[in-house]
Length: 465
Image (spheres, helix red, strand yellow):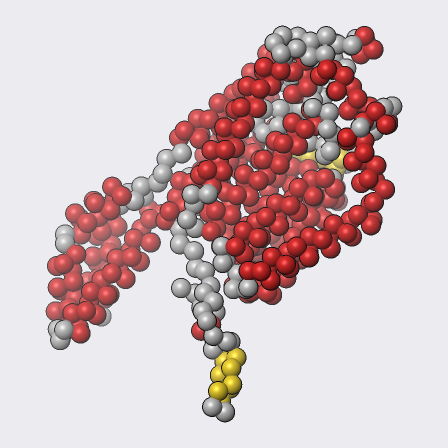
C-alpha cells in the first residue's frame, strides 16, 4: 500500500507542473505504465517491492523537473490561423451583406447580424476549448436529445413557403433545415458507441442512419436527406476501413453498399416521377420555363450577361425591378454578386472557400485518433456538401434548395451552427493527439472451436487493447 502511495505522489507532483489539465490523465497513465514495468524488472532481479519502488522513483528523476519537461511537450496545438481565417470569412460576409447587397424589399438588419455574429464567435470559442470526446462518451444521450428536440420542433413548427420553421426569438427565425447540419456530428458518437459489436453494431448503426435520414427528409428536403445519407455512408466505411469494427472489411463494405442500394431503390420507387422530372429540369430548366425551371432559366440568362469585372446587363424582360431574384441576401447571394460585381468577385470567394476546405481536409487526415478523425471529417463533409450545393444553385443548377453559404450569406441561426461545427473541428485539431482510441482487435483464431473433445469459447477474441 505504501508503494502505491509513493507512485501516486510522484504522478501527482509531475502533473502539478503541467498546466494543461486535460493531459493529466493520459500522462499519469503513461507514467504509471512505465513505472510498473520498471518495478517488475527490479522484482525479477530479486529486489524487494520497497527497494524496487525506491529505485524506480530514483530512476525517474525529480518529479518537478520531469513535469516541467512534459509541460513543454504536452501543450495544445493552437489553431489560431484557422480561427483568424474563420472570423475573416465571417467579417467578409458581414461586409457583403451590409455594403454590397442592396435590397429595398428586404433591407439588412445590421444590429441583428452583429449580435448573431458575436454570439456565434462566442459559441466558436466555447466549442474550441471544449472536449470533443463528449460526443463519444454521451452518444446515446446526444442521439435521444437530438431526435426528441427535432420531432418536438417539427410538431409545433409553422410552415413558410413549404418549409417547417421554428421561431425562437426576434433574433432567430430558425429553419428546421438547420438540423441536418448537426446530424452528422451526432452520428459520429453513434459510430463510437456501436464499434464494439461487430456485425450487430453495423446493423444497429444502419438503422440509426436510416432513421436520421428520414428525420432529415421530414425537417428539410429529400435532397438534404441524400446529402446526409452520403455523409453517413462515408463515415461508416471510413470506420470499417480503419478497423474500428471487428468485422471482415470486404463484408462490411458489401453491407454498406447493399444498404445504400436498398435505400436508393425504395426512395426511387416511391418518388421516381418527381426525381426524374426534377433532374431533367436541373439540367434543362427551359423545359419548364414558367414552372419549376423559372428561376433556373432566369439565373442562366442573368449570368450569360454578366461581366468579368463590374456590373453586368440585366435583360429587358427582367428590368422591371432592381434585381429580379428574391432572397438575394440568402438563397441567391452569389448570383447577385456576379451580376453586380463580376465573375472576378465570384472567383475570389471561390478561392477563399477552396483554401479553407483544403486546409480543413489536410488537418483532418493528420488526426491520429479515429474519433477525432470522424468528428472533423463529418464537419468537413457537411461544409463541403453545403458549399458545393449553394454554388451549383447560384449557377443555375438548382438540385437542392440551399440552407446558406457558410459564414457568408444571411442566416443567423445557421451562422451560429456553422461556427459551432467549426469550433468542434478545431477542438479536435487542438487536442486530438492526447486522445486514445480503444479499438477492438480481431486476432487470428475462432471465437468457438472444438478441439480434443472440448468446446472452447475464446472471449478474448474481441478484447480492448
